Amino acid sequence: MKHFFQKWTDSVNLITAQNINFPLHLHQAVEIVLVAEGDIAVEVAGENHVLCKNNVAVIFPGQLHSYRKRKKLRRTL
Image (cartoon, rainbow, N blue to C red):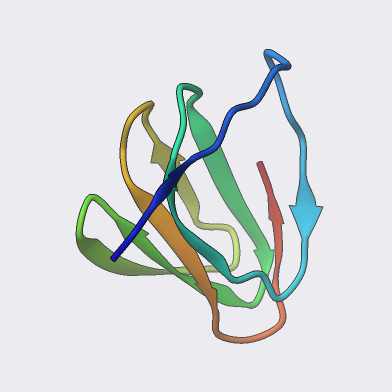
């Protein structure tokens, strides 16, 4: 599957989203995902996981990852 490089220019980004589908990508920043409600399917470095309410994932720079919606959710990056 193709992936892309996501370039963030700020040192810290805070994003809140619901029902997100985000394709396979990587970037130079650490990404911290907190599921505030619902759940989300996350693929990190070829491994699939499901994050539920109050779960946290840490994605390190250069790790290929993607998100697939499962139910309504809210995540903060």
